[in-house]
Structure formats: C-alpha cells, structure tokens
Image 1 (cartoon, rainbow, N blue to C red):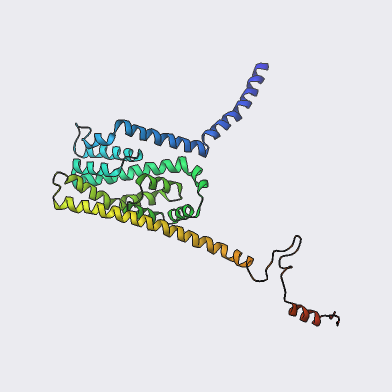
Image 2 (cartoon, helix red, strand yellow):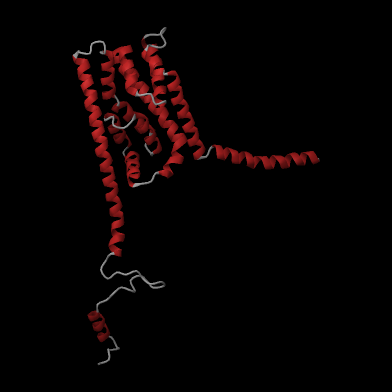
Length: 294
C-alpha cells in the first residue's frame, strides 16, 4: 500500500518535469538552435567531402540516362541546402546531360532544395526570428514578401542579385505561402539556369555562338540583378519612411498646432489653450459679468 502511494506521488511529480522538458525542447529558440546545427553540419560536410566535384565528375559512374539525372537532381537539391553555389551545379548538369535533360534536372533540384530550405526555416526558425524583425526596411521587406509572395519571389529569382539560400530563409520567416514560393522559384529560375546549362554543355567549344550568347546573358543578368536589388533596397526604405511619416503626421500636426499646449496635470485636453485677449474681452462683455471700468 505504501509502495503504491509512493509510486503514484513520484509519477505525479515527474509528469510536470517531463512536460517542462518537452516544452523547452520545442521552444522557438531551441528549434532555431537545431536549425543552426543542421546548417552548420551540412556546410561542414560540403567543405570536407566536396560533393559538387563528385557530381561534376559524373558520380556514380555505373549509372546513366534518366536514372543518373534523377539521382543528380536529388543530390543537387541537398547540395543547395548545404550552401553549394548553384552555378557550379548548373554547369555540371549541362556538361553531363546536355541542354534539355540538364535544364530539367537543374530546375527539379532547384525546387527541391528551395522547398527543403523553406520547410526548415518555417518549421525551426520562423517563431524565433519574426519577433526580431525591427527597423523600417526589414518590416517593409517582410510586408512585401508576405502580401505579394509570388510576384516578389519571381522577381528575386529572375534577377539573381539575392543569394539563393538567403532568399529561401527570408521567405520562410515571412508569411509567404509554400505553393507560391515553389511555383515562383521554378518559373523564375528557368532563364538564368538555362544560360548556365547551355554554357556547360558548350564548354568544349568556347567560341560557339551558343556559348558566347549564354555567357553574355549570365554577365548581363548578374549586373542587372545587382542594380535592381540596390534600387529595390532604396525604394523599400523610402516607402517605409513615407508610411512612417504618414502615420506620425496627424500626431505631429496636433502637437505643433498654433496655440496648442500640453494640458496641465489633472486638466482636460484643450483647457490650457491660449486665447487672444480681444476674444476674451468680447466673450466676457457678452456675458452677465462685464469687466470693471478702469
């Protein structure tokens, strides 16, 4: 009897402890720490094993055709999560599979990697990072991504001025929808990816028109992406400043109105406002208590 009561008391004391541990492990900051560990481990694995070189060399050598392309696409997606630059993988896809199959493989890997990064950021990082959004520029950028998700992400992918991984995690922290993010990533990545794939497939003949055109497109799109990103950053800052000024305008105008004064403690607003002497005299003269003659 005594042992049963002791066990019941121990179970009741251990249950809240288990609940507290579970809540601590599932807290936003714990999940953010887990995300940091996962990304750091992935980046370390890339630095140690260099999977992009293995893919460029045609790994695994015993496979070919569609099977090799599917395996390459899966590895492509995982490598982008680990911060491997996409241009290297696009060039390798063009050199290994040609233009058509290389483009399909690269776009599939791009969407896969972006989806994994978005899911990790949304699940493990959004709850901890959203309260940290401060400043007019960050809040304005978050508002644009949240309200115009597809259009904003399509513009980011078309003009590669923003790093691939940074765009993925910024979209995950915002309130952008998952489907809008994936569809905009797939469509917006086609032009630039196609240029790299063609350059990779024509790398053996660097004087060919296809190689020269694709290389020129890569250079022009990169410069245009940097310019657009720079101008967009300033326009976001200006729009945020205008919204802040519009919100503060009525309060500032009320405080700076001629004759307006802050009410004294215990005094109703507007009671201490200045009034011209002539108006006071006319009001008093019209009242039942005229001013005494001097």
